[in-house]
Image (cartoon, rainbow, N blue to C red; front, side, top):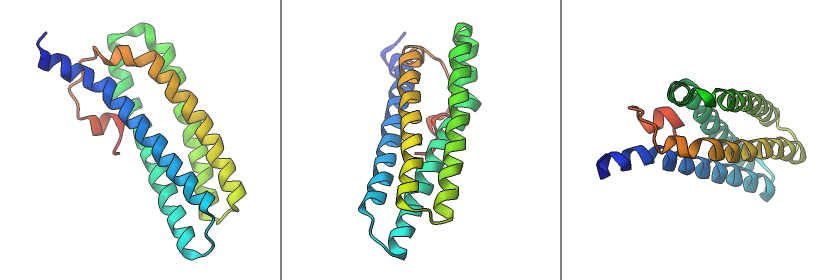
Length: 156
């Protein structure tokens, strides 16, 4: 295997780490916006923007994994199917939590309620990311997948 081929293969594990880092940052910015607590319409618009952007990014990341990445891993590493099913279940739970957050933002819930939604998402998301990284990063270092990272790991 040439150095260029190795770099291409390792890019999937590196890209997954980068995406997880960006999603963690997006959640942090969203929570900071809420913590600032500036009253008024401008603050509400800002929070809506952060929440919408974060929710869209996280949801897009998980949809890309479910649609492209996980089937490729399952085909190359059938023993990982139980791990992939567990990760897909996490995706479903996180999607439900994101729906709850969107609904709370849309009805202008209190900062305390919004923080509860964000806390639940943060806890599940972090646990999910760590598990995914422990289980899949080595596999991603050798996965041959001819696809655009943005389509596989989400539009961040």
